[in-house]
Image (cartoon, rainbow, N blue to C red):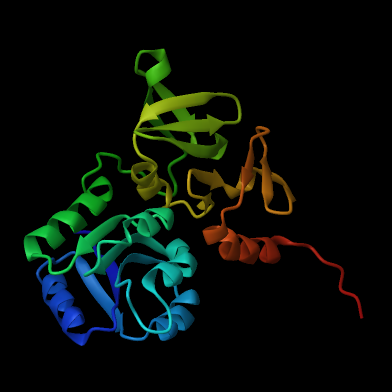
Amino acid sequence: MVNYNCIIIDDDHYAIEGLKRYISLIPSLILTDAYTDPVKALIELSEAERIDLILMDIDMPHMTGIELSKTLRAKTRKLIFTTAHTQYGYEAFEVEADAYLLKPYSFSKFAATVTRLFASVMDTPNELRPNDDYFFVKNKEENHKLIKIHFKDVVTVESKQNYVMIHTVNKQVLTYMSLTEIGGILEQFPDFVKYHRSFIINRKHIESVTGNMLKMSNGLQIMVGDNFRKNFLTFLEAKLLKANRK
């Protein structure tokens, strides 16, 4: 069984206790921490390893969940807002929340949401591992013909609503899969990252950087999104060769 680590951020102690009970009933969920202070969560989680799931309230003192998620969204595989307010739906969409649970919600609603979000990872027939070098997908534009693609040749994966366009060094393949689903597979490979809400990119294929614009090896240009800029700058700083001037 695959286990997924999760974090709770909510200023309501009763809400946290309720979530703890729900989480304890799902064996694959492992609660690693719970925060009542969003500022403390921001400080500690900004430096933490990537998280599988964050369950976050929206209406909190000092910093709203929407504001907090702009920094932490890139740190977590899945983000679920848990709130008693309905008016934040658009803002939740803007920061790419995966689900929106309206308090009070039942355990069955919680369990169904978690199962849906992680189903592509838990139930996928793909047994891909970091030492695999290729995979097959059905190409919609070739009558669903199976196409072999090498991981090293994938430049970007672009969201196309219910499909994704896989851009490689020499072709494009349109396949029926969401960006979230293929992201759950590609995240096993550390060079595949999101620096834009509609793209997963292979960092090995970044040819040049002009401001916030990335030019990929196939000529495609992608703007780094605001929510991903901090992680991108951290990567760029680590890879930037600089003179040691004294």
